[in-house]
Length: 410
Ligand SMILES: *[C@@H]1O[C@H](CO)[C@@H](O)[C@H](O)[C@H]1NC(C)=O
Image (cartoon, rainbow, N blue to C red; front, side):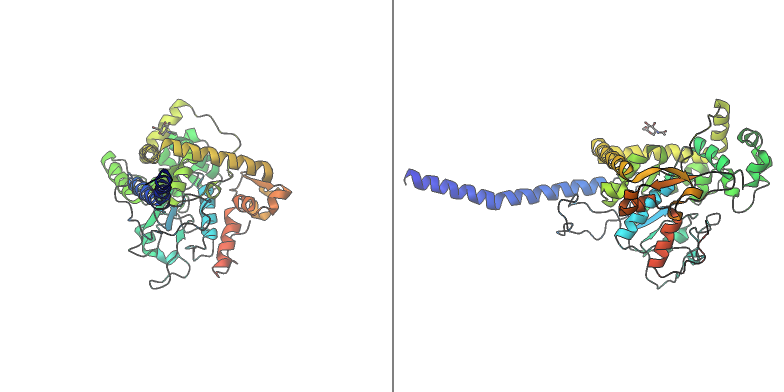
């Protein structure tokens, strides 16, 4: 055997390694990553996370460069509990865009409005066109008070991602009080937050059905539990039930990280989670230490809920990887900055805005919405990001053949 043929054999061997072995190694690596990913995806404080389904094995996304080819969403159906005064509209906007992009069907209110009767427990009969044998929706994302009836909308054997968002009860209650004091008699009668907290039981007697749940622990109420519950043991039991059901409860104060976790769970792109923050009040009142203490005491159940799920969020972040989340947060902020620069002209009161960008404004308050630049008007992503709930709902209703004549007027 001469040197040349040894060299030839060597080259043939090398070619074999490259052609056969490397792809094999790659496949093994991918499988390994896959199983690690699937384990982490299923580590949740919830304990009984929904089973995975519809894995698209061997079916990469159409654009291989677009995102992680091996990402499997935890579920393809979503229950979003849109809570009040938590920046939930921002998350809702992400979900509406997700739904439209992926041609999902929304469960929408039979009333023809953009809300379910959130002051009462949800019933399946509140959904437009609901019947047991009718096609199932993919997502429900409008204001409602959670009840087990929500689950009946979806097939028994199909995993449903349970998502919500909560906020620090102290700043939230202050915000609720000022937002609602024009319309909620219990707050209107008290006049100031301090007076209300001096004797809340006296004022809540004045409550009316639609707004009474704002009086105390309104998040606990929206999750379907008794907001007047004071017994620590019972509050802890309720918390346990909530944590068993909900896959992700976002934290308003950590919105960016929460969105990054959502991206991870549902295999979204940075573009999917980018959002403009609207509905924010320009200036906030400083609360005295005493008022803060009273607020926490009065809203003990929500305070426990908040602490629990803030811890849960950060545990999930560390399971997914702090660096990965930080990286996504940074990419998201960069994109939002670019889009804001290009598309947002400013923030204006409703009266000066195109109807598509006006938000609900309770009596006596001025809420600002987004004024797009000329370029922003022409950019579909910017337009959808700036569009408020009502025009969005109108679009969805039209797409699903539901009459829009009862939709609230501005
Ligand atoms: C949430 O928990 C994290 C981690 O323990 C903590 O750093 C952060 O301050 C908490 N956030 C709020 C708003 O309480």
